[in-house]
Amino acid sequence: MKAPAGCLLDFDGELAGHLLATGRAAVEPAWPCFHTRLLRWKADGAEYGVIGGTVGAPFAVLVAEELFALGCQAMVSISSAGLIAPGLSPPFFLLIEKALRDEGTSYHYLPAERFSVASPSLMAAVSRRMVKTGIPVQRGASWTTDAPFRETETLIAARRKEGVVSVEMEAAALLALGAAIGKSVVCLAHVTNAMATRGEDFEKGGDAGLEESLAVCALALEAATEHAAEKKEP
Image (cartoon, rainbow, N blue to C red; front, side):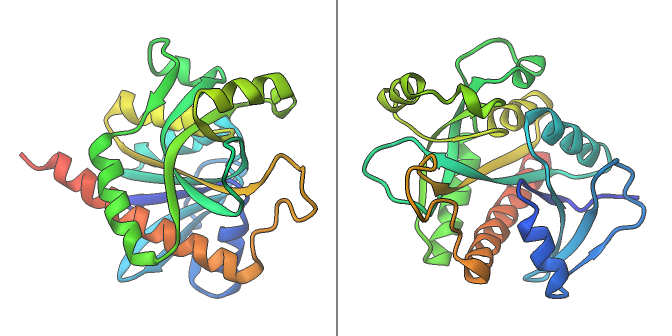
């Protein structure tokens, strides 16, 4: 089989489930990667791949590598994330410009540096598209860790001083993979909680929140696939 040119990794799997429930996506029976289903989703005249439940850096890059091997050219990921920065209130979307590498997976793709950094031209292209949604999308840094119990008060305070906005589990590895193999990769965080310190933490807004997420992801996929096509032009 050939994967769509643009694919979405859906950390929670809620977007994939919502697309199936509303009849906007179909399962690809030939998808070979174990423990996952590839959905084909048509949005605004384009077809995208969607895979849900890609939790954690090692599993996310496993699925991503399979997709790239089967023809995917651009990838968007969206994960639920916790708020680190002061002065912001969830829920909101974060376009991750760089991710602190507090996991092991990214180091298999790139030499040791503190951050995995997204393509500046791709970030600019995605940001321009986001204006169309009318949905607030922040840009900034995230902290990728593969063990939530490492998120101690001391480390949270230190990350806050570094200007980190959110904490999640995949972005550093996915950005490193994209940089290593020359693919267009966009990482979004849906910042839905303040580290379980509020009564309404983890609330995404029901179906309306899922539709917002899909609108943001569709525009990111559109920008990323165009960016990938431009890179291939002589």
